[in-house]
Image 1 (cartoon, rainbow, N blue to C red):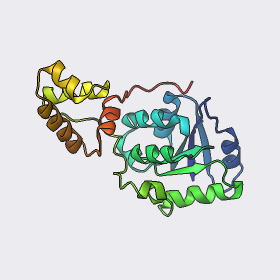
Image 2: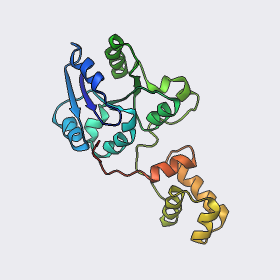
Image 3: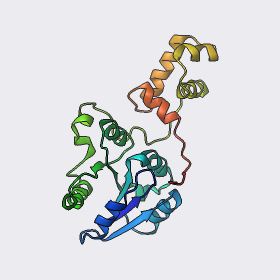
Image 4: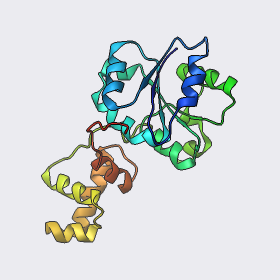
Length: 211
């Protein structure tokens, strides 16, 4: 099992790196400390699992846009965190992660959990909080689509937090027209609600450093 760890300063994964480096079932452990390092590591040699911290979720969502499709298709993505909250599980699921690894997991169970995740036996979609919501996995990983420029303008204003009434006033449209267009944009982008639409609109695909 070849592992890439995206190690950031906000929630360092140093202890996990040590555990994996000393496990005979792990072939290699690469550590990336910024976006360029991560991209280079993913394209230079086979990586089975990439692991990021809970604070690195947004980074990893942006990172996906810069990974070759053949690499992304075979990559299993995991979030490792000390605080596996329900919101984090839901966010990771919507960002297309395969699983969440609590760092409170006993050391001897960490690698087996990663192996089960790699094989598909263990998955974030099976977490009770995620299953109860019936959400589409990876809904927030793609680029947003628009039917026309009016839809684009409306979604841009949704992204900055304007209400339907404010959008209608700003664009000189009827409130019903705005509501219909927002609903249509949610539907064609395979989203569930307005909040997801705003999040997807506000996605910045530039790769920042972990620092």
